Image (tube, rainbow, N blue to C red):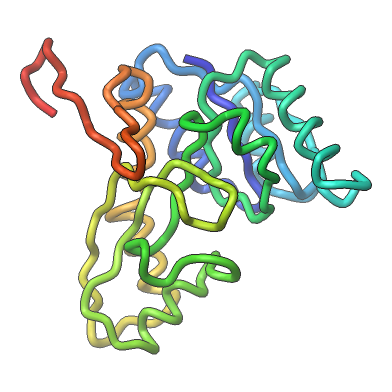
Length: 214
């Protein structure tokens, strides 16, 4: 299965996907393109190191959102992308892009949606807000992407306990290590095996008949 990865920054989640492809967990998967909204994103260097084609497509270079969407769609189609993965991508794509790849775009978000999500909730902000609110449990969510921020059907979630001495930085690190690192490759694996059934707002995980497990 061909994967196109959208990035904006350091590319930690991109590296996680690369590692799981290389260790065989994501059998039959390959990243055919990494697209960054930011020409200085370190994620591009990660892609280069692994010989993955990469490109910069910045929304600022287009007069309209539709032209930006058209460029992204054209690029993904040229690289045979079957699944688009937003891995720390900080740009809102338009309805045209979302509709073109509906049911084939996933995103990882560092909270238990619907908590601490939506416009402006990215990077360390969800963790800062979780601590400010005083929650005892946070986590991460992988969801299908729709036009509105963090609004698509939820695929997988994992909880992470908040410690009394947590700072936004320590909580961000632990959510990444205990939740995001596990969830994103697992969602990709399930999609690649045809085990995600999108039924309206709900995502059903189909049983793998070969292992008799979910």
